[in-house]
Image: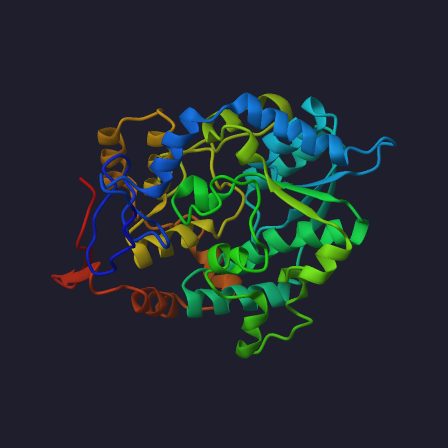
Length: 377
């Protein structure tokens, strides 16, 4: 039995620290969220059988002449580096790695990408039209409350475009975030999703890239962000899978693996808004993305990190609660001025947009300052 999110009533998972405000999340009769339920199911999965499934899949597509046989989306971060390295060195595949550049590379993000490529991988880097991407990022920030939306489109679309262009039959993404982190779990028992329906509803917040033409962007300008059509994918016989279905997904272990094999480095200091140093390191604008999630849903970066570390058994719930209460919602000041310059807005306009996304059941003003009404306990 599942309970849909009740927008006006806030409650928290009894096992982790995520609340019912996360889009598409559900809870069972124990008050346990769908991501924690999936973590429980993973304990009962026969991973040897999943490994056999993976071998059969890769045997079907592995080239005999060394030509590219799988597209591996890769930023140089911990998860994608782990997947690409496993595909090449454990399973004997011949990956072409594909990277959609972040808005503004951090020093550590750029170094990790270079380290990854220099560790022995062919790579195609897509850097979208800077003028268009800055405008698109600003519009998404203002209209959707998420400056990362254009990047999310590109990360999903570009590897598919590369697969179609080069006739590479298989794409292996890392994990299905909807299943792993508490969104819709309808695809929990399969290695793929329906691109023409699930992708837009979940990863694209219900808004297809083409829909942004109503804000003055042309179809031509939006091309880097648009998925190939179902007809194009069918003609090219593209198979789309998630590695996390076949292998038990543990981000901390992925980080250790990538550090050992591809030169992945963590931040020297914790990331703003959380306690961790190893996740989402690439983009100087990502702090604003996480801050907007905190404003819109009352769920910040520390909540996201602590929730999956509790599920993975690396942290007790009470430790997670303390970290969330300490770091969630911390303002991303380190690169704030760069973000304003990138999207060409004033600080005053920034706060006008931020405040427009505060929902009354989550926020109240106390002595002239905004306060979150509910906190995990």
